[in-house]
Image (tube, rainbow, N blue to C red; front, side):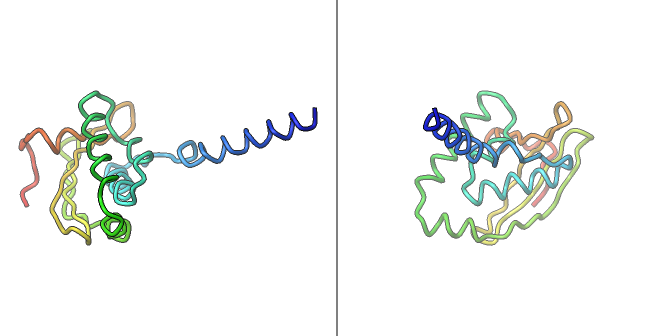
Length: 142
C-alpha cells in the first residue's frame, strides 16, 4: 500500500508540474500587453503558451499550427536569435473597444509585422488569420 501511495504521489506531482505553467498563467486584460505576451511566447518557441491566445476557429488554429511547424523546422541558431530578440512595438491602434492592431518587429529579424487582437468574452484573442487574408481594412500604415 505504501508503494502505491508513493507512486500515486509521484504521478500527481509530475502532472501538476507539467500543467502548472499553463494553469497559473492569467492572460492580460489589456490588448497591448496580451499582444506582447503572445509575441514573446512565440519568439521564445513556447507555442503551447502562444496558442492560448489564438482565437478559436479552424482557420486560425490551422494557420498557427503551420507556423509552429515552420518554427520547429528552423535551425537552432535561428531559434536562439528569436529567443534573444527584443520586441519593438511600432504602433498600437484601437479600432474600437474590442479590436486592436499592433504593428511590431523584433530585434532579430527586423521585419514589420502586425497582429490583430479581438476581445471576446472579456478576453483578448489573436485573430491569426488577419496576417494571411490580405485584409487591409484599417491596417496601420508602415
